[in-house]
Image 1: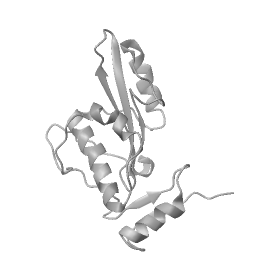
Image 2: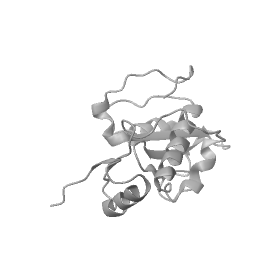
Image 3: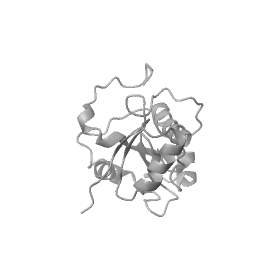
Length: 173
């Protein structure tokens, strides 16, 4: 990340970065009293960009919740990560989510189909991103459980060329 004074300066243990995946959660006060609207974004910073969403208009996730339920939702949302969530400003979230989408589009990948349902929650953003995506200067594709590795690698071969990216595939038994 290019230095922004309002962004946290945090040392990351790269061995615990889960293949470049970042879970992002944005909670906003709902117009109704004691309610919040929550949107989540699963971001692949190494290759695929926005992999999944959870949001107020999305049937997959909650539309709104009681303010008192937010802490439990946050704990559950970030349970797969080794450490507690890091509170950051919306500016950093925008650079992360929109920047990853921009990077992935350059590789031939479109964001998750429900982006339009949750994009308004992020507000206005002005590119370019101050975050560098990829892994050591190249895309790194880590196969997810619902990915079509063949199609993704064919896209990478077409857009960046064979040998110009790295990959980690799941063993199938």
